[in-house]
Length: 69
Image (tube, rainbow, N blue to C red):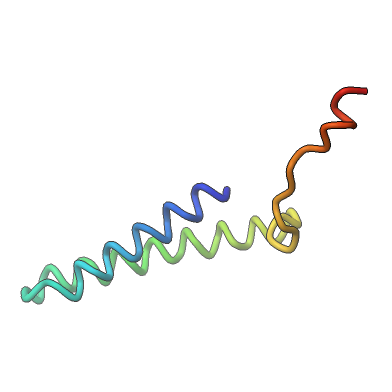
């Protein structure tokens, strides 16, 4: 889920960059629509992270002592 979140953030920032660099209104409208659709997916992913308790906790490394025993 962390990788998906980073990927979605990259996609949204890329669409935002494209939105600022385009002069055509139809392309800007398409970028805006796509950004809104991606944000719906991001919200669903954030809800899933919160529901499972993954968002509140910082990712941890595995305990090596526990793995060897």
